Length: 383
Ligand SMILES: Cc1cc2nc3c(=O)[nH]c(=O)nc-3n(C[C@H](O)[C@H](O)[C@H](O)COP(=O)(O)O)c2cc1C
Image 1 (cartoon, rainbow, N blue to C red):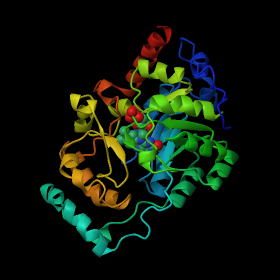
Image 2: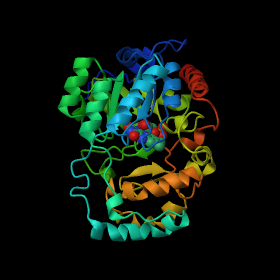
Image 3: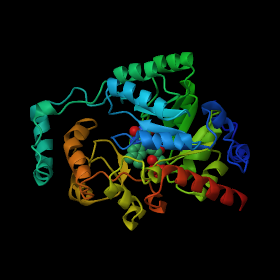
């Protein structure tokens, strides 16, 4: 549905009304769709920062736990879904990145890669890593094979980012009764996702941590803040809207639902919890004063993402536009990211964080955070 009279349109309050229940045991139409009792989605974390423990804890707590699987092989996806089903009897989502059309094709040869490897050589040296040879630098797992494995494993919910799910994914998911959530960074993307048959849409404001999911226009033309994006998406589509970006406490959640969202998707605040796969250094950074400002950078992966600035981001700032596109830069950076994480070295790690990251409190369990969030939300809902 397009136009300005979406079901959330004029009142902008349907989300608020739908979850008025003080017990927190009703999550409105998104709850009905997904089978969750709290209107809270734990944002998926790609790049190895999701964990089975976090996803299961959030799902057991009544929210929708999500697992970011975009770097996993098809076999790993099969195992992951099996493990999650064994860990929780509640619904959870597994998330994949839809490849962008011009994604690093053709794959660069040795001569083309050489200057990009050279630029990173001081960091390989500093961490005692051999600089990669061109042959070592390969694209990640094939999307079609990932999708086949995911559909066969049949998780309770599938979510995608960076594009429209292929028609066969929608057809097969529908046949198997699996709801599919898409991610939009603009109103046009939300409408395109609804037209493609998606069941619910994440309205991902530019405030959000991690990679920007723009797929219709370049990222710099798709940076709409959460406060502006959510009501416009709620007006433009009739499917449930999940607000993402810069939401970390009950005030943000109440605001998002007042703006017309049915639920919230929270990333950074869950990343800070004990169960997440983020390093201790990353978790510390999330609740530090450093996180009060964040930057958009291509330096870690070749695709624009929001995180806390550190030495690596400041040193390589002149090369923001020069580094190769995703997934080439991501492949070149993988050994550096991995080693820096293992050493808890925050100055070389990708410290992904949204604009409200500094509101997070370190070192608490995901269910404690979820319970606190719902209490805080009800307090602000009544204020
Ligand atoms: C470390 C990190 C990794 C992320 N990876 C993914 C991903 O693979 N797929 C996805 O749809 N969203 C991803 N996101 C976005 C989150 O799921 C969520 O929408 C976002 O963090 C919400 O904004 P917030 O961080 O301000 O709460 C990622 C976010 C972070 C912080």
